[in-house]
Length: 229
Image 1: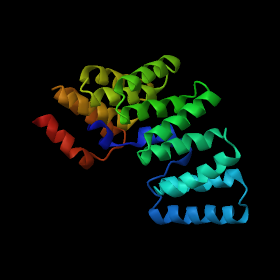
Image 2: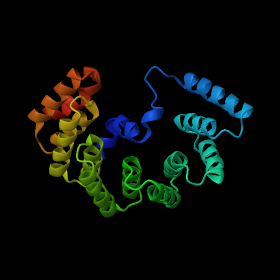
Image 3: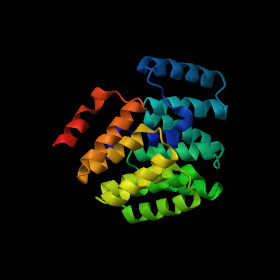
Image 4: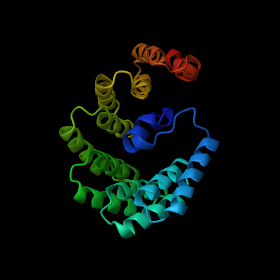
């Protein structure tokens, strides 16, 4: 399952693009932002937007229980709030409460049928919940609906890689790279697959490409070494 530990930025961006943390943001920065958000909630406790904003900082700090309480509060007052359903599903997933996560994703998709992020989140949840066939079926449908989505191809490639389906995983990461050529996560994941397949020359070319895309060369020493083995 090497493809996930390499870097998770592409998946996090797909699911939580509006809440991304930059490298420059430190834990203290996040705590400060949370305190500002919390202060606004204390002043205007009935404001749903402020509650959602505070929950987003709780999530970035991995304060899952606090985030869930905020989403619970929002959904008690607005049961069809798509943002709260979507992010609470992710919180449930982090808490390994997959049944509840599925319910929130499915509720969300009844409100906004065909929503890309909702479908992607549910597909990846199926994989975690030991439902690989359903996960693949959902991703196949997602790619049919969104054939220009690099994220969809990369998500399917990740599941294929976990299942040892290296040839099709290589193809799907290649498709993701075609659609998003500068994404170093896709490049590194394809390199890893190619190493496993014995395509070490091509893997090294991918690593060189990742360096050109901005990945520090020393960070790839282990992968370069695997290309020489």
